[in-house]
Image 1: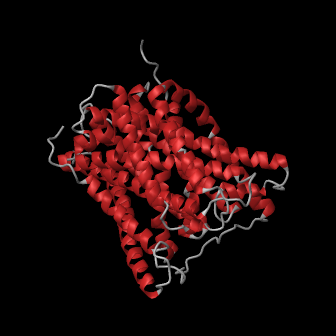
Image 2: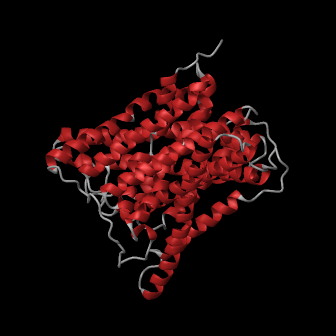
Image 3: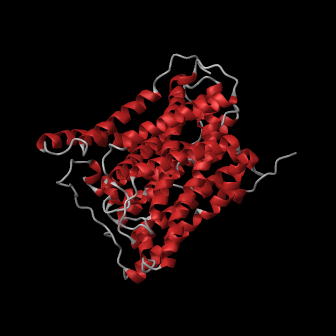
Length: 494
């Protein structure tokens, strides 16, 4: 039976739906913390959206040329346009870091949203971090096991979750404006513009606290994270009635996501100080009234539903990709394992992913308590540290994926030197934006490490787990990422 072809607007909304998920609900407060004012926040979003559009135009060309050689997705693109060294680097990063990390932070993001919802009824009481970890493990198994036992269940859930996840976005936009005009009497909760230096004297120095101008650059990885996964939509081009219209549909979908994200972010900033739905829901009415509590609970719980939607898709992708890599003996840990048992394959894959989950959770327990979570009472100290670690590891994972895309685009430009001036301009701009973000993140990691060492020397009574250990772990994470990308190079090309 011939598969039904899809139209232009179906693709536009598919791209839109595939992007909207975790990032916008959890990264907005980080962007506010980096920029410090409404103007710089808007600039950070506009710069990042333009960078994503440039990248989108470039990836479109990459996907078209790779498809001629029957290769799709990042793996296929890297195989076509990169030499064996960089291809294995992209592949190793996806296998040994990016995908396992996804299955680490998505359950915690879902739990964080559920904790926010529950705080409506248990206000002032922090949820025990060990209980949070147990529930995160349960969600981890849920996101991993459902794709194994029933792909149909994934499709049914997505059809429901995809509709529900837009309710919090719509609420944030409308409620933010109402609070701004009625409650705040037209006065934004953060400065319209504030370009003064903001060097804290009670903590080690960091480039992100040096100037909001640098805060714009520091915000780019967080915003990139909000768009992460848009490149996967290239796989539906062959299902269109008019495949030639796919590039326009993809770019229009990204623009639509950008407009909604920017509007949502601005409205939250106008109505709140920290740019979160949790604070915005505090203006719904008397928090002691039952119907107000129920409404707040539903809105905050719908954010968890949005994460379920994203986690379902990534869980399916993770299982399929890991299984294929297992059978091709691409996974270093399983190279000597010979089995035709589907149960054993899935068991080993789940064991590997669970090992990552537990190790990263352990590291997160000793991470720094981020200023983003100051004043939030429904998380205990360990929970705040885990969520802060997730903020870092999520940004870096996303940023390294974009590094892989930049390397692929460079390979494309080397092979197709006559691709046209317009394509070259967009390609070089996308590479430039990614390079600036990467260089800034690496330099900032070194600066904060040196600063924390000096701080510890000058303030010996400060617990080493407060600043020194977290910044050492951040540097170790960077080193681990580099090692992961450049190991296992002696195997023959596939």
